[in-house]
Length: 174
Image (tube, rainbow, N blue to C red):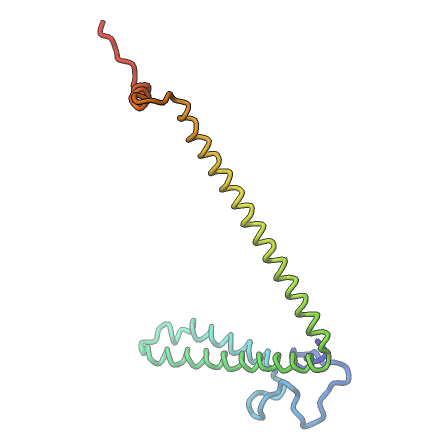
């Protein structure tokens, strides 16, 4: 798959994959839209940096016109989102090409993702079981502590006997 993304990253061209002269590469985009040797990744990085630059620019920090600031930031963010959509579209196109050319590779990736998901869920179940056992033990300990007072005598005066047993002994005057 890395060879099918030639031109995506600067300086990385698969051997023998140079486009003919005058024909734009897969990431060159619409004519006049970008510099001749700019890629989607370069544009995405530049628009991302522009978003931060617009947020920390002294013009915006010291500016008094809030609407102008808002408009400038909105434009930077919109450009970043547009380039991000183009990048996503590029990867989706490559994914489609891969699924047509090598459908078994897509199935292998899907199986791998499902196995990873099962493993993650199994670990989560184990974590919850550990917590469940802990709280069951806590409840058992509480039940054992509450069963001890039942050893007291039963009968009509049992409550009074229990209450008087908890009272301190009277102090005798000298």
